[in-house]
Length: 96
Ligand code: SF4
Ligand code: SF4
Image 1 (cartoon, rainbow, N blue to C red):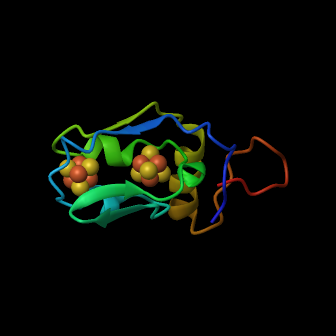
Image 2: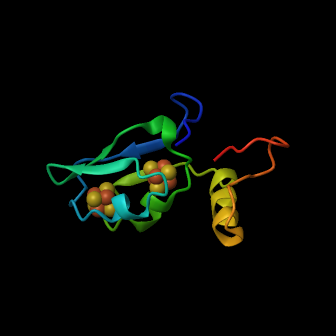
């Protein structure tokens, strides 16, 4: 699983709002969100691609993500084509 630029992911988590439902752990395509003691833990922000799925699906608005769509679009395109994700940002490299 790739890491992106260190300490750049724009993701914030409000522990007080989290009800421990676990939805965010199910929708994160990179599976970096876990539940510990019925609260979300984001294990490695550097693996976050800022797709916004966790934020969009959180019923308590406990996660805030400043979205970037490039990598998310690449992952979805990969799923549709049954191929490796590639957004075209670098000609021969896989980025997501
Ligand atoms: S979806 Fe929201 S409320 Fe549910 S576990 Fe994740 S952060 Fe907490
Ligand atoms: S923004 Fe996307 S990749 Fe980042 S933690 Fe949320 S679901 Fe996972």
